Image 1 (cartoon, chains in turn yellow, blue):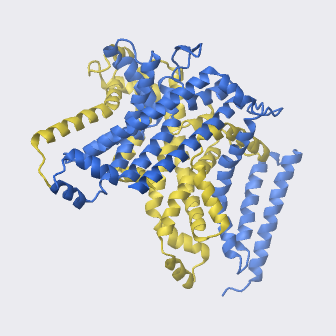
Image 2: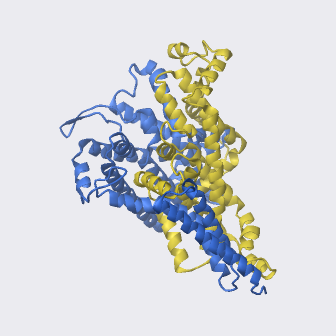
Image 3: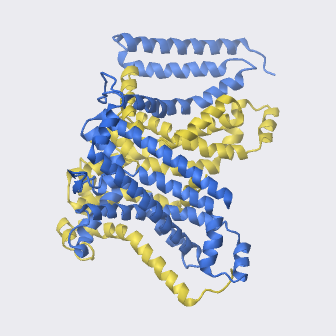
Length: 288
Length: 351
């Protein structure tokens, strides 16, 4: 396979690659130039750089960030809080469950594992309506607000993310030699200590994968928070805020595009920092 | 080893009793109401659960310690999973056979909701275009993704950049993407196309497909790249020595060797295209007129199944009907996935 590529072939491939890249990046580019224009400038000429000014960008930013329908910092903080807490709990509880399921070969552990695997096929739509009513009823009964609250939504994400997390982490636990656990046990490590001191640190690569997969999903999820928190509820995540904002400013593209930019930026920054991990994590999650 | 320590036993029992007492107290408040601390019953419940598990954990036993830890380790995830997935799933199947309003139901109606939805022409239309959408996307996303993967594994300058650029759209949530593309179709491409593509049903449907490919092909590409790099170099070398050209190598060596990757990608595109909701909602919100479908005029030309379910329940407030549609959605998805896995498995064995 070490044959030299013909120059013409190379040029063709390069051209195709660049054209496709231009196509995939074009919408981002359009967003980036149009946030520097006012509403009239966008409608008049959305493609060129004419009419862009930095001051206009600051004005747009101010109009959006301080807008009570969007409340960017609040929505951003809520989204970040929900995502981070859910990810920590999923990694912790998922690892614990995966270890118990993997190391105890009983009928029960098999049944639990099978139910987890089978549940991955369940689409959100089939559980979403009863979920809301169940959460409302349970919340009313025990006196904890499950809807319109951050703990409630974290609880839901732990439930929905659990299956995939256990599936991937079980695969990892299987690769840890049992001898390690026996050695630790002989050295006087308690049963639960084996998990926290030996197994959990060794699960790190898979925990990273799981965190990336769950993180992308939880951060971008719209349907679950919009149903649980309500369209214009007190608590709102970033996607819900964008939807509410766009709904109240139809066709005001200067505001909408600035809001879109603000919603995209955190994810893009994280991607630029952890590009390799994110791409390999997404692949690993799919291949397993 | 550690003998049963009476102090530890006493502590454990104290926690257990306190836990049960707190739980009982909170449940009593739930059922009877009243009391000055009624509003704090949730906190009492949580402390009760924690105390109970602490007692369980401290319980001095040599034979059952492992079992106790197993239960404690499994409990959090199983509990959340049960409350958010299993119970709503079972309730949902039940509710789909009642006149449920989202809050309560008064009577069991059997399969009436299921019969009703098959008489609803707009629902049949949603079903039809969802199937079309899935078929188009399964083919197109895989073709585009595979082509991009070949591009990214050929000797290209700056592969890292191109890979990241192709993958980038997949990072952004469907709602935001939908609005950005709505802008592109309505304000930018409109200068080329005359009228916005989103106004006519067929072109709007095509637009959703284009956006979906744009969003998803980069991800599928990454998985194909992952598969293609596992094709051993010496096999490719042998093929080259035997005089195989690039096309033959692709057809006879690369594709058969990554059959399992193709299975994964087909499965992923199938299920995710089927569940498509965010882009559909943000881009067209399901609008689009259909002049004559089974003798009726429809205004939900681009409304796919997931969005149809959502609108039936949330906008039109017919929870039971929406739930029945959702159950059908689940059954279709489950059947298709099973058949698809079967077919792919049998093909892989042959190779």
